[in-house]
Image (cartoon, rainbow, N blue to C red; front, side, top):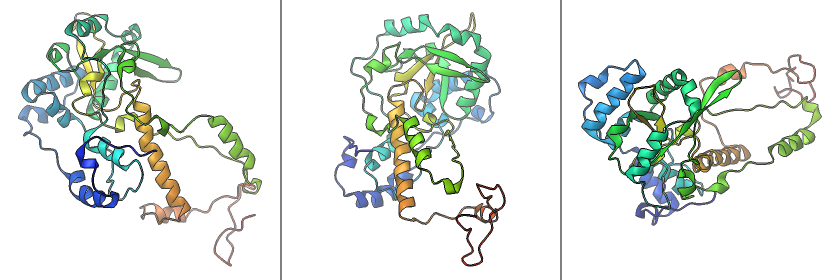
Length: 333
């Protein structure tokens, strides 16, 4: 990931190691002040409507920014104190401020917002209303989204609204998506994310090459595909930009209009993939460097259990015979 420089003064002066020493001990751990929790908030809501009413009440009492701080969980970013990487400044900005959402044009007018509300969600949503309400209860609890009455957000600065849809999946739960392209949000978004961080493509060619060059003495090649749960949802949006990625939430006939606001990177926004890739590729760079340099890994509570397992020989399927000479398996056993 190439080096990214923020325009903020705090990232412009000190040498890299000095920045880490000062920021890692102070700025990275500074708590965000919050107001006392109202008594009525201590009871956990049980229904989708309860969550909306609770957050609508707090919106009026505290404002949107403080409501977001209450709802959003602690960042998944670990300490960056020991990270020596060209993407350090960029990742530190994402950790402290969240991903920015900047546009090339003026804010939407009230007429355009009202038009988006009247158009509403894609018709696929209305076939899955029960699923969406269940899904959003889970995402609200995780601090990923909030849903509020549209009338309570009518004067929210920079509000834009995009239509959502639901994609059915064979043998799996449906998938909630947002069409930020149809609304023009993607076209208007400034590409401030490092697109070069998306280091994928020609995946099949690369996999076949590794299989072809694999040492046959180690047995057949086995492939593993891993998926990071809630991947995009692990990166916060800038708290002042959340309303720019608003979504018209589908409602039942006769119900009040609702708006869903993402507190994290949403699926469908053009900058979500490169921002997320900046994190994952940095992790890959650091992990590969540590493997190449035999960097000692911290102890794990399952180390002893893992060491007690005798692996099977990949060619015979039988337990590997331990050599007495060095205590390790013979490479051809």
